[in-house]
Every structure is written in C-alpha cells, then in structure tokens.
Amino acid sequence: MAYDKFTVLKSSAYPLPIENVDTDQIIPARFLKATERKGFGDNLFRDWRYHPDGSPKADFVLNNERYSGKILVGGRNFGSGSSREHAAWAVYDFGFRCVISSFFADIFKNNCLNVGVLPVQVSEEFLNSIFDAIEQDPKAEIEVDLEKQLVSLVGKNLEETFEINGYKKENMLNGFDDIDYLQQMKSEIEAFESQRPF
Image (cartoon, rainbow, N blue to C red; front, side):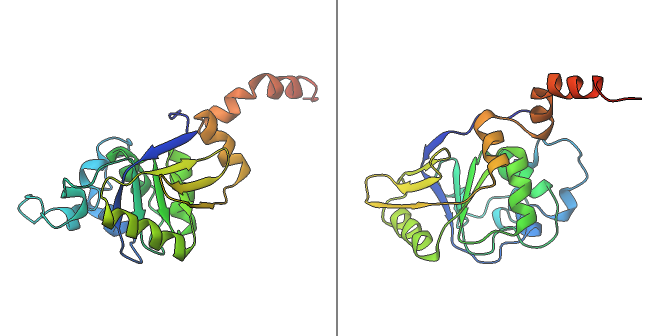
C-alpha cells in the first residue's frame, strides 16, 4: 500500500511530554482484532483520551482545541513495550505524519517507517526546546525536511539534524512501502530471473 510522499512537513504539533509511552497506551490490546489499517485512529490513546462511558477527558492533549497539526511530540522512550504494528497504524490513522522524541523503541520506529509516519529522534535539549515553544504558543510550527534530514522551529534560530536509514528515507520520499519498492524493480528482477538456469 503506497502512502503520500514525505518531503517537507510544516505543521503545528500536539505535545505529549510523557516518558515511556508504550504501545498498549498508544492502542490498548482490546482493539487489536481488526486486520485492516483503518479505524485505529479513533482509539489512539483510548484510555487516556476517554472516560469509561466514552466521554472525552477534557485535560488530555488530543481533546484540547488549542492544539492541532500532523506532528506528535512525545517524551523519551516513545513506543516501548510489545511489538504491535497497530500502534503505528493508530498514529497514522489519526492523521499524524511525524512523531518527534528523544528516543524511540526500535520496533515501533520501524513500524512507523513502514506505514508512512516519520519518527524523528532529536536530542533531549532540542526536544525540550520544542515543548517550550509549544507551551508558549500552541500554534508554533515545526518544519521537518526529510531530504535534508533537518527539523527546525519555524521563526526561531533552532534546528537539528536527524538520522534515518537510507532505504527507508528513499521509500518515504517516493511514497513507497516495501512492496511498492519491489514493484519498481520488476523489470530488473525479471531480467535477472531470465538469465538464471532452471
């Protein structure tokens, strides 16, 4: 399944300055029955976001009208816990295209890259600068340039580079998942196969 190309994202953000957010908090286990990648956004952070009767918790950031955007800024060690790919699906389905943290659990990070969400790992200092900027102005914008591997606070002299696997970078720039990547190489694969003895 192809995704939108990710080149430069300029957006306001939702701040979630909580450390060790695990995948069960991102998407509780009781919502893992579906096999399609749709509808998970409704249950993103379900137990933090809603009361047991289904009414929204006014103090949770996703329910706060002051915040908006396609970027989620999380605390250190975001996406820890079990390896459920549904957590990345929920983040994407809600509308986020980028998650920024000072550290990601590896499996969650890779699951995000597989579904079109860019995980941007920054230093603790830069992460705190982002949280401070959003606290001062909920509409503060962040720019994420994938080609340059650069994240910056718009209107401020604050920026930092980030690392990303070269293969995943190319896929995101082109809007490819792993299957799309292989399909682009179809003629090369067929040419190689035709030269192999049976």
